[in-house]
Amino acid sequence: MESQNSFRRTIERHYANIDWQIRRIYRARNHIMHKGFCRPGTRQLIQHLHSYYISTMHNLIGDLNKNEEWDISSAFEFRVSVYNMFIDLLKKPKEKPVTFNQLYNPKIWLMRTDKSESVWGSSST
Image (cartoon, one colour):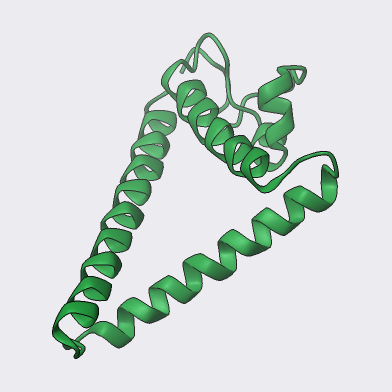
């Protein structure tokens, strides 16, 4: 259970770091728009933005290809739901142990159909 809690904290810290980076990017954008020049470090922020954009588009296009009835908003809502469900599962390991299949197929989390071995071993640890 401790490794599962540690994993959850790592995921939450990663989320907070990305949120912080996006805020930095937005502040840099505002600085450029209002002052007319870039601060030192802007190039690195642009690289972060590019990475986030490519990753988001890759996932979005993949989700839309797999679910032709979805629109862009539905795909984003799905990703938010998956993240929230994943964090909830990690908070309640004894009730709903997280499995390898759940890590690689988010629809299993939402459908709750997989009953295979927990990623973290037995749920009593």
